[in-house]
Image (tube, rainbow, N blue to C red; front, top):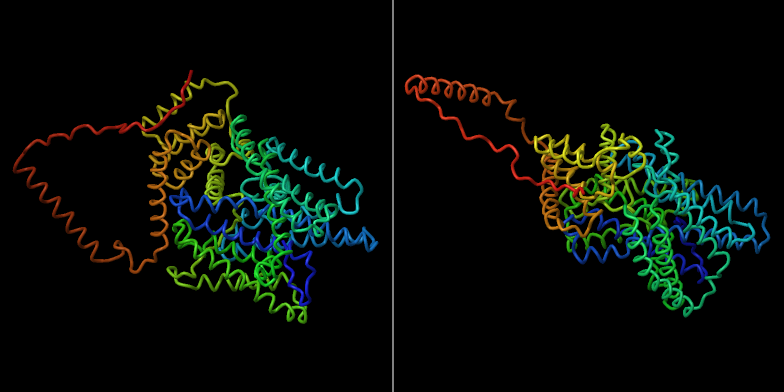
Length: 589
């Protein structure tokens, strides 16, 4: 990401396309996070929401590619000027580490806004950490080195390969897990790991240093864009096919991530090429607002996240339909542009006062978000804040990660693994090497039939840990938790089941449970937020006087009637113990 103020002098045309691409990445990032955070689970099944998700996988690869592209262009300029490459690399490394530092600073700001100082928030490995570390790796492995093409392929290949190997990493306690989470996925620390995402930055360096894209004609840019768009769909299908053949869930440790990585590269290159073509044909006035957003992308990122997911966004998180959310998304884009404009306006004063640019940006984020928090909860300005960039992750995945972390903290590692299949959770689950699947299923059935729903959920979770191919077990876990009255984790498991088996014949039934539990969880959250206008009844004197008198009256009346009538009481009919049988078991041969 870039956070440089626009120079008063006319910028060269060759850089406008890059800044325009970065501006488009900001807009796509904001709409992705806003719709993800605000739209209800029911409306996320709509066509409008599906259309918004078509662009959701573009921002992260594009930001990483553009970061590498800028690094490559700087390196190329330094080589032409015959500068000392060791000094150049040292300067680039300092800048890369600054970006990582900004990442931790942003996490601290989010913690202050939400007043949430848990380790997963403060030490989260997010997009800025990934960009900074990727720049650091590429600085020392690619800048000023020979055989750039081969080195780039090695960085990409090793990055993807080590990412695939992360499934065999042992569980590590904090603070070591926080350090490892910068490199590979470690729940609940990691949002954007270095591996394999640094490959996007490496490709950007190669493009900047060797392809001379700043000299591309409009025709060549459009041809590259069309070629990149043409391969997106085949790569998507290869990803789905690989997941279907190998089983499991798409993750950075699944072999299907190879096609997913290539798809992200194609999407990013398509946006970059279109931006280069547009900057060569259109007047700068037509897209100047995007240039400002692009040049202030780091501030735009830091500002809008607290208005999409966190405490500030409480009144609208998961509450809106697409028609309600769309104008608010446009408003958020305009508000973010205004914040960047404000930052640019005080840039000269900052330089005169020698105030670090990061301090100015973070103060704007704090003041802007605090102003939003001061609005009444029902006002339009009452938008959101949260501790995560949706990438990856969407809001449902983020909620699953949070609940899994809570389960793991309570020692329920099997349930945590079933909800969020992290190897860190799996390593804490004890599973017998040899067991009878039929006996285990019958044991789960007996627990459920006896009304021990919490215990049956645990038993199913252990069964899933031993046989993760039995995805229907996730539905059983959700059913058990729902019958145990644990609405929030049950809702997460129903969604997890649909993620694992979207074509399930139980889809209509599961959607019904999701709607029911979503309303219940939302209602509980609203009740929890409502302030108590008066003391509870049990603290009122008249309540106890009335209760005592009522109990005395009932007891006296019962004694008199019992003695006078001496009528035997007929026992009620026996209560049905099991109720409707609503647990589905995998077939056992």
